[in-house]
Image (cartoon, rainbow, N blue to C red):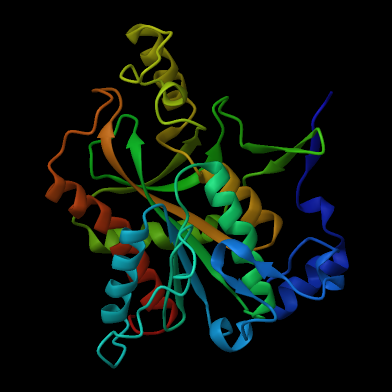
Length: 317
């Protein structure tokens, strides 16, 4: 059965015009409007139990990343960067009633962890996009901060995703819906990527580039690693695959980019992905850098995104 291709042409002209005019976050589900209550189960939030507009209506930037600890650290970092007053006691886990995700709010910045892999980030994004919609947020920018394996890059290089591709090097995300394959575009905002690149260059203490990002559904075999519990290919076959990806413009590999790009694009959210590389996959498969070095690497995307946010808020020229 041939896949069903869906993209921005699905959205009628009047709907797209309304979105662009008022900047609100629109869900693409006609059933939500008739529901008496929307329970955001994995966030432990809901439209009847919480005043979502009062809690989140001022959100302008949403930053997501895999690790709960890392996203709490980013929230604390942004608290200082934005010069917020107080002792930081208001940096609390809004989703403390669940152990699925953690969420922190610092001024107009929402920080959320999404776990590892396409299914985990997909669940989070469904509820996040609905949350932004219910809260009547406007002109929201969403950025994924992450770590990745580099291809042909030194560890510590920051890659801003130009195009998210799947394991077949195709710029699309395939979702099975009711036994049919729905194919969605993984287009990201090019202007946003360039603004983030400029911030990285302005920092200047490490290399920042724009490159394609390959999303896989597995950390080991799916990424051509030789060190998993299962392996059915040779080192030569692995290198051939990575070289093919490199020739196609891929500069890093992770496990969330295609669904992130597809869902944000489908819901008209301005989105970007900023990942640091922890190793060069041409040189090996295992991450061996010392813990303190890896921590410094992980702060690099945060510094770029912080500079971008401060520029958008007029806190930096």
